[in-house]
Amino acid sequence: MAEISTGDSKDGKKRSKKTSTKVDMTPMVDLAFLLITFFMLTTNLTKKHAMAINLPDKNDIKKEQTVDKEKTVTLILGENDRIYWYVDPKKPELNVTNFSESGIRDLLDTRKKSVDTLITIIKPMKDSKYKNLVDMMDEINIADIRKSAIVDITADEEKLVAEYKKTFNIQ
Image (cartoon, helix red, strand yellow):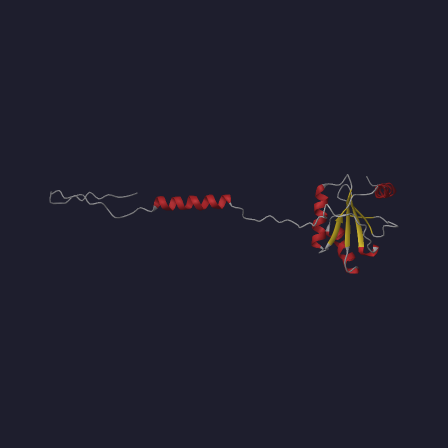
């Protein structure tokens, strides 16, 4: 608070009132803390991280590209966080793994060590969840695999998964 001294004297004579030169800093400090609090609460403390995905040009003519079958691994995303995978597209021998570290991460690391430039082909099924696709992209990013593609699943692959489920009695 601001103070005002009245300047009364002891001898009974009235003198002119003198104001104090003291300035109270309490309101300014209150305002400063309010502003600091406001800016701290309204700012973003973390930056959002996004993965860069290169999409093909819409005007580009679709070209068939041939890739060595040993350099690819096809990952079919199924229900209940299952991943069906195979290497040879001509004779697909289906295997199953999951999203654990001893599952897909080991598979990608092992395949990457045996092949110089591994290409992953991701094929989500209708039963898979969007979360599975995001998790798979994260695993590919962790494994530092530079080339990957998200492709629609074919009818033959759906039959292959259905036969695998029937053979091993998977629900």
